Image (cartoon, rainbow, N blue to C red; front, side, top):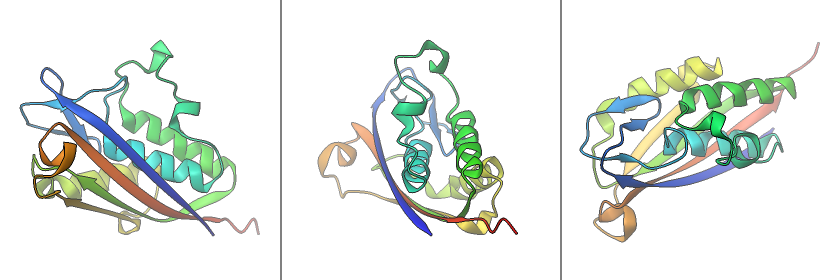
Length: 160
């Protein structure tokens, strides 16, 4: 078994869609980034890549490459799933925390879990997502940005 940890943060700005866990959420601001800036999926991808010793998302999907401009992070997550399976790993579990004062994330968590499990070809029971605030403190607490942490356990498949 191998453990990975991922962390990401993106600034909230006007004029962008708010995408989290592959779900479009109606909100007056969106996350700023080269891709769709899905902070949750970025943290999950880094956790998976780290567990498999495959680097990070910047290595695989650099923000200097125009082909990733505006890309859906679900597509990037799908590619990460392929990379870890090619190395002989399967997902045991993913546990993620979104840190945001607003918007409230809880109504969307089940859809996020479904998106992630389908994209990674794993059971939805292997995916957990939580949300918390920082009680008005820091950049997430004042609404300037959103952060996410993710941890995962992957294991080597028995090749038979």
